[in-house]
Length: 64
Image (cartoon, rainbow, N blue to C red; front, side, top):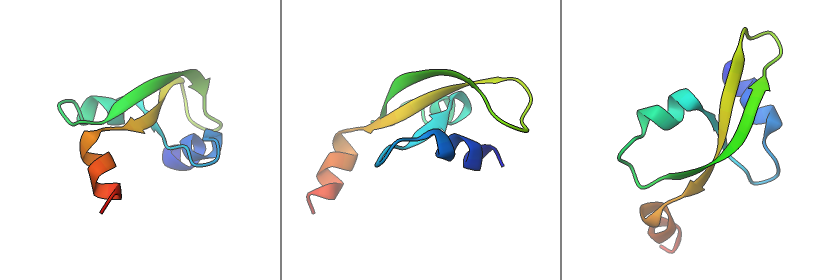
């Protein structure tokens, strides 16, 4: 349910993740841009969301 709520807030072509996901990928080459704190319908509390901006590894993978 949380993933669906977070995904619904994403813009076209955007990937949003929670602070939990950002913390779990520490040390990866992914970069994140803060998207603020949000209340998610049906989920208690306030959630910090981040847009995934990629990294060097993901860019080279896309090129083939």
